[in-house]
Image (cartoon, rainbow, N blue to C red; front, side, top):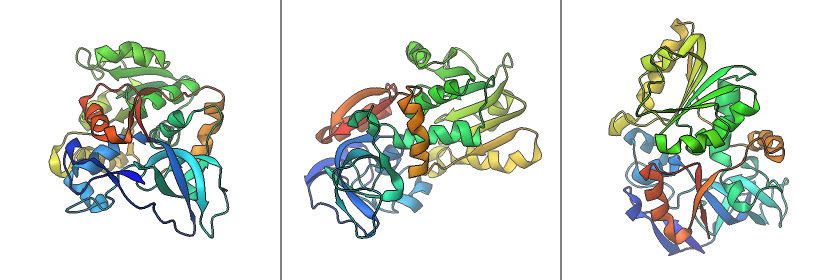
Length: 322
């Protein structure tokens, strides 16, 4: 089969398309013929090996999994001896192992049936980003009707879902993005858009019940200034902070401070499981959240896809197809 392979950490040029064996599956896994694979920020981190602290998870000197990728949508072509949820021929979406390939192994607990309303490309754009947004907006943020929500990084993969989820819950949403993407985030349902280059979300003019910081780098103090006295800030990912810890230093600082103040400062690690995917299905079926696809690339164009992701021009998600 064809797969995108990286033998070392580095920029997009470390990615190359190679022929390799079809992966073997464990007893509780299924083999999926990948029709589409989503590209998320986590893939960029595993490709570059940055921040260095992350190498404890994805390999110290070289990638533990030479084929990157987590998101997938496709068709089950083989079933492990103890796998019972899916059968050969089922159309599924979720997370697998090394999904930038024509075939990928996936645990049953990380998959759900593909919504009939979505194409494979659309479905592949859902798992990591939409589940992260779901857990940030609902589980950590406890959004409710009438709440004022501020979303930093609203035009990206997670942000585009966060805007839609917060609006579906009845919140008033202010989206922070570049001026060039203002119309885009408003089209997702945001009530107001702030250009981060020209407007300061923490200038004291507005306060918010919930601030979602998705891939940003403002200080914890600035996030607090944007909150109401009892508001909640959820830090999702984050950039900056140097090559060793990246944005993790802000998350550690927020968690350390939160017990001593009336505001709630928290973070999350969103694992994609079938129950979380299934929570999204009614919203997808109702059209309350719609995957927003910026561009698709082929497997052979994986390097260009990651280069485009890093450019900052992406609106929503990008997806690889065989």
